[in-house]
Image 1: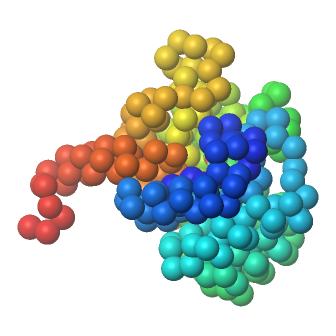
Image 2: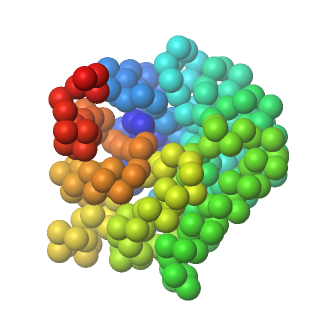
Length: 264
Ligand code: HH2
């Protein structure tokens, strides 16, 4: 999953793709580089980010989506109206970092469209989520949350086969808590749905290189973490540099198979 943020303030690509033409080019490049899906977002959810009004979010993402007809797209939004308009334009998936807690109308919109859905764990909200995250046990707390949200989405009419689950790396978690979630990803894999993970360039990976001030990690560190998550069962990787991840994960998958080709 390639990331295209149509925002001025995203932590890694903020401002780069605010112009619709630049965003369209970035999305096409991601697909050319091997992305199976491109996640288009109009609201940053980085720590400290402030909420974007509905009109502004629509103004950012709709012109981009209109120009990407035919490409496999996901819309990164918590707003039912943004999702509804995007799905009308042919987007196939909704990536909701609030796991259907942000907008009561979103579950119905996803169910009615028969769209795919990513449910992500977040403690708190972006403005304050890194202040003091508290868990009894981060892995079992996140797994229990995702299981409850999965049941909620199914009860609201979303088909189980359409749902993937995401531990929400960096969303109300300390660096150690983020790493524990990757290390024990099996607790989320065992919920029975595909696991999506967003490690790309996140600050935890800069911190493991000994720089406590890092806000944007390198692609090399991102790939190392993605391969570790792959080994533990993650199957969808939300990334900024698609080509590097496709190559690294193709190699990791070939080792897992013990064969060059998927066909013997
Ligand atoms: N991370 C970000 C945004 N959306 N969605 C899912 N499902 N999982 C993630 O880990 C995730 C996400 C944050 O990264 P980015 O989009 O690059 O930055 P920003 O939120 O600042 O736009």
